[in-house]
Length: 197
Image 1 (cartoon, rainbow, N blue to C red):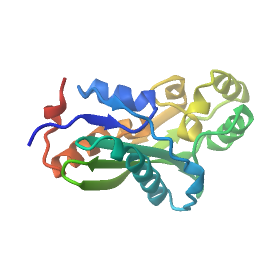
Image 2 (image 1 turned 45 degrees about the vertical axis):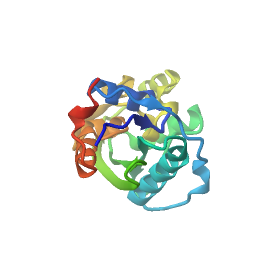
Image 3 (image 1 turned 30 degrees about the horizontal axis):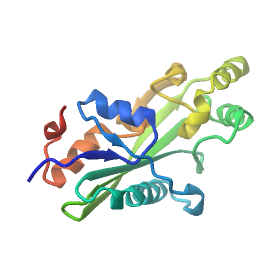
């Protein structure tokens, strides 16, 4: 079995960097799937469904490739949070999140178009947020970073200052669980080292 091209159906620079960090240079082909049409209240099911739609939107364009779709949300106090719509929403979110523990869910879908196989998984990591002053919250939101991220924070950026600790896979919080990816590739019959550039 030849090694197919690895396609990332996401515009996320963080996901691309994670793959590059472990030697995978993906073809980046963002999905134009409209996420607003999916309304699911259970976070694990929501991220898996969104990730699958993203991957399935891109898959027809690559007849012999591996297509990876991902989606992340933060669940806190029974509420699901994606990207905040504006700075005011991000400030309000951080006023609720600070000092609390959230669950960061990421859905992972791998479609092997050559084998006509699809794997759908999700992973969850606990995130312990720091206590923050209003000044720190406003300064963080002013960087613009929280507006680009599920949960209004980026573990690989300024947001790492305001996360006391995590329990579970750290790369999952950034947007793609690398250990889970390794397992999914193995399930499809590949070794992750096959994709090293």
